[in-house]
Length: 361
Ligand code: SF4
Ligand code: SF4
Image (spheres, rainbow, N blue to C red):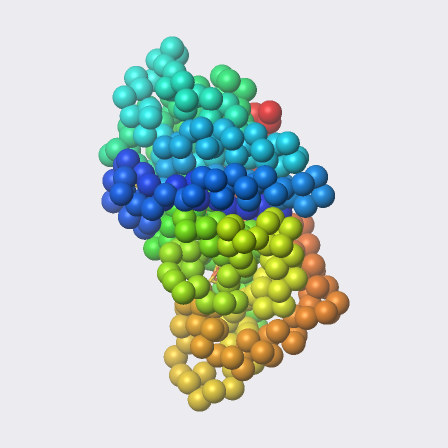
């Protein structure tokens, strides 16, 4: 979370669009018939990381990445060779029948994948618990901790006052003490990849709609190999992608090329520095801009229909001035720290749980 506002410090990678579970809140509507990401292209793309050109963090997500445990282990190993740390987010389908006993072990291939990554996270919420009991999800976390892998929980409630969140966070503290940090979000119409750090912002815009979007910092590899500028689920799922939010494709690009676009595209710099609302406010000239405004992310996607706004944004974000503005916005968010970041983007009431000491590897 400390690195989440830093452009290209992380990469979210969809290992597969498939999932054996059927959680009612699954915005990706993942099933076992969903699309598979080309494993060869994933390996090639992660293989393009070098010591000098690599993300600090590789987030392996889905669907359910542990449907492809061999691919997870191979990607984590390749990433580590370049100096990138990996993290895995799972719904723990493989633990559904775990009793919670100290002797429970995941299937061998899954165990290899879990111990290949640097960080292991399990999603737990009321919807998941209908598919995988909480005790079983906790058994998966306990296995990872006992194997020496730093672990965390990704929790979701209906709102910050949802009693479920009090119950599950207290249960996790009783079970794991301070060893398992928790990222707590509230249900919203965005998808699973986004749950690494929500694409929703709870802060209010400042004067003239200034509200930076930190989500435009880490690119996302979608199931079809397209690389998007952010984890907003509509951006990840809908085609065609608005051109200003597309930063490549793993069939044609390597990490250095994607990183270069994320860092230097003038429109992305401006989205990160002041947010899409301000860009419409400042540069919108067409008659429709005097009408009702769309929401934050809908307004960002709709910039594609406003070439005059994109052109002016491109000019403002180009060159040394644009780079400096971007750097300043990033620094402010990094200095505010991970708890403040989660307070803004997740459940503010539970933000401090992200900073529990955990078990660094
Ligand atoms: S929410 Fe996650 S675990 Fe549940 S069905 Fe969707 S992808 Fe699978
Ligand atoms: S504001 Fe734009 S870049 Fe940011 S999350 Fe929303 S759609 Fe993505």
